[in-house]
Image 1 (cartoon, rainbow, N blue to C red):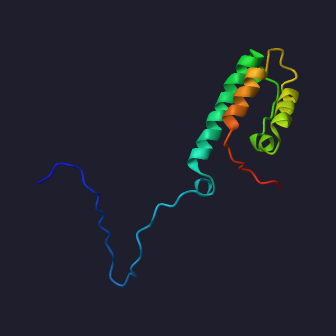
Image 2 (image 1 turned 60 degrees about the horizontal axis):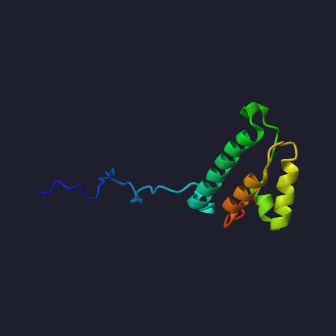
Image 3 (image 1 turned 90 degrees about the vertical axis):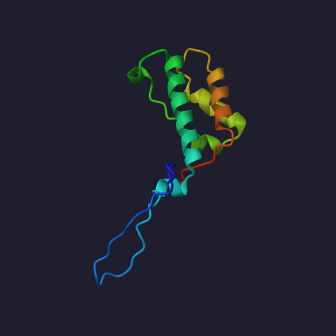
Length: 119
C-alpha cells in the first residue's frame, strides 16, 4: 500500500426518491471572474507602494497626509505628459522633490489595464 497522498475521494449519500444532483461546485466570486487575480494583485501592490511613498514624501503620519485621490484608471486614460501634469497638480502641496515618485508610479502602471467603467 502506498503512503503517498492521492486524490481525495468524496462519498455522497442519497435518500430514496431524491433526484440525482451534481455535487456543488466551488464558484469563483464575481470579482475574480470579471478581473484577473494577477491584475488585482498588481493594483494592490501599486496602491501599497503609493501609500508608503506618500508617507516618505510628506514625512508625516497617515492622519496628517493631505487628502489625495490618485485614480489609476483616470491616469490610464491620459497621455504620458498629461499623467505627469495631473500627478504634479495632485502633489503641489508636497515640499519634497516628486519626480522619483511620479517616475516610479508611471513605470509600475505600465501594462496595467483599466478596471472601472465610466458611469
